Amino acid sequence: MLPSCIKQACFLTAGLFSISALAGSYDLVIDQQPLEIDGKAKTAMTINGGVPGPTLRFREGEEVTINVTNKLDVDSSIHWHGLLLPYTQDGVPGISFAGIEPGETFTYRFPIKQAGTYWYHSHSGFQEQEGVYGSIVIEPKKREPFRFDREYVVMLSDWSAETGKQIFSNLKGQSDYYNYNQQTLGSFIDNVRQNGFAATVRNRLDWGSMRMMPTDIADVSGYSFLVNGKSPDDNWTGLFEPGERVRLRFINGSAMTYFDIRMPGLKMTLVQADGNNVQPVTVDEFRIAVAETYDVIVQPKEDRAFSILAESIDRSGFARGTLAPREGMDAEIPALRERPLLTMADMSMASMGGMDHGAMGHGNMAGMDHARAVDMDQSRMMASADQSPMPGMDHSQMSGMDHSQMQGMDHSQMQDMDHSQMQDMDHSQMPGMDHSQMPGMDHSQMPGMDHSQMPGMDHSQMQTGAGANGDYAPGSGLTPAAANGGKFLVYGDLKAMTPFADYRAPDREIELRLTGNMERYFWSINGIKFSDAEPIRLTYGERVRIKFVNDTMMMHPMHLHGMWMQLDRGNGRFNPLKHVVNVAPNTTLTVDVPVDALGEWAFHCHLMYHMASGMFRKVIVEPPAAQAAQM
Image 1 (spheres, rainbow, N blue to C red):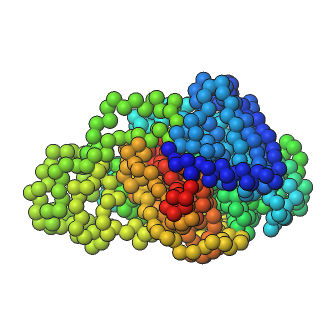
Image 2 (tube, rainbow, N blue to C red):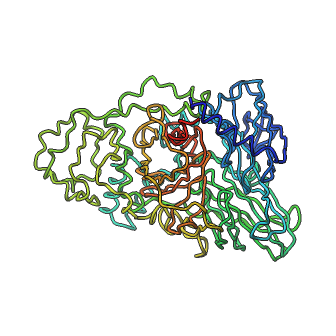
Image 3 (cartoon, one colour):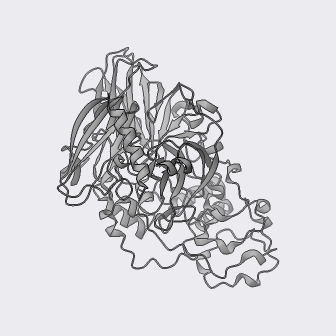
């Protein structure tokens, strides 16, 4: 519970803003109804009868009143993703408010302090996956620094006939349940022909020792992918006149899917990222992480149709729309590109960051009823597995042991192994592992093989396939080169249109290691699940650097509620502001947070099932001590 002084300060700010503000009122009804998409039928959750819900159009400077009525038989909520507002209006049950009970109406009231493209979604259970989401367009007070003749929202999402509860239960029971492209005898023979028998066997053993496969690109496959609620066969279409400049507001409202977006035959000029204007950059393709938004402008000059193609990163399918001069027109749809495969360079040390050593000291998860998670608020869903330390396992005496011949070693049989007699163990020959940076390493602190506690281990220097400071390297296993050798967007291309006024050196730094275990399917921060973690405490007015170190083999789109993160790209005051930053496997990425919003806020990975299993924190922003004493 926040001190009353913080609540008073929040409401005072909102009240002062509303004196001269315009006012708009909106009504949303959350309900459910039978729905069939792409031949897959289920009872979907809807907003005002549709999936997605209606596009809400606000104006910068107005104060909005939004009445949300819950007609479900379970609690619900709406979170206004990316909007700057009083924390009590943020819509996260258990943190911002109690939630909306069945049959009740909750009225949100808050000022609109910004412009751009955003979205809204439920923050209760798995309702976002079930259809409770929609787009937000905020018109600016001032003229924008780019021209366009017409605009469209392009909301991308993933759709399944299974419920979110079923998907989560399947992942907890078998983490590769949805990996439909596992390696076969045929692929083994092909690899032998290409690389030789010894190299192929060694590669298979290396992957086996990490309990993963080169095809582990996405946690969930089998989705249908939608544009504004329409499947590829339904072909959502936006019209244009040849020569017009068309603004496309891309929003990734998926639960789990990253998309690579291109428009064959058209260049895209990117002008906004997460609602903030950036210096225009022309690209042929860009990747949009879960919960990000990007605005692009295209100028089709020919009197023909153009495809909007959004391929899932595992190439299991695509979302498809069309820009056309007339209704009923189709554009050619290129074949899906070859499914990417991870490489050892992509993974490097990421396999050591608490991943896939599930048999070693995670305690017994028997009796944990994950099926009930669907009825829980997401802020309370983060309990996962027991990550207790490995008692008695002191590797500090293991000098001299030669691990160089140990590829493919099955650690799952080592529960009863007494390492205390392993003197003269030489780690120096372990391939790919530089132990010179690991002084005094005590393995007794390795809960669940979580190496995030390894002192002296600086992942920021481990720039392999993913590139420097979290950027992807086009052509690596993680990111394809753009089609036909074109330009693929990376974070380093993003520069703010206007300099940030209060740019300065951070007052302090917080390191957040992104940790987890794919085999047992739980995710955490600094090796601690949400239910066991203390809140992150920040002080109003400070500038805090957050250093994300991804110790896992998966990408994580990290989302901070209520405040901006200034992505550190080496451009000083022109570093861009974002509400979601994607942290690639085996990379370190830094952001600076101007702490300017009192209250309690959520901070989490926006992959729904990662958040549900523990990669979540509460952030509490308190007034400076002197100010608090006067309130």
